[in-house]
Image (cartoon, rainbow, N blue to C red):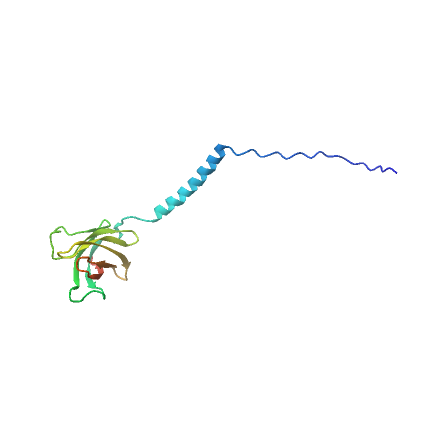
Length: 161
């Protein structure tokens, strides 16, 4: 018995192979990845700020000895000449004046303060602090340690003008 069913034979097209990537393709992809990485790096660099005149003015206050300091050798110090101009902490015109504390340094847009101080007759020491917005003014608060005497202080100065 023979079947009279007709069948059709279809030719299946063979899939073409993708071309192998060339060196130019790799360079293009590498360049694209590098460009994206640079964008993220630049965005991070621009998000942090540098020196800022935002906190410019004259400040006054005091340096009070920390609780770990010897009360007989570490006395409170009045600070009446702490000036920030153009984002920089400026020492007084007469640096030879050894009767007051001398400061120098800079302030960032976010209010971080980094610089140096020198007690009367002492050596130059590093300090760091932070500007804090209060209800009616701005206050700088920071910790200081005088290496020569071993005294630790809390610096609190408020904007006078």
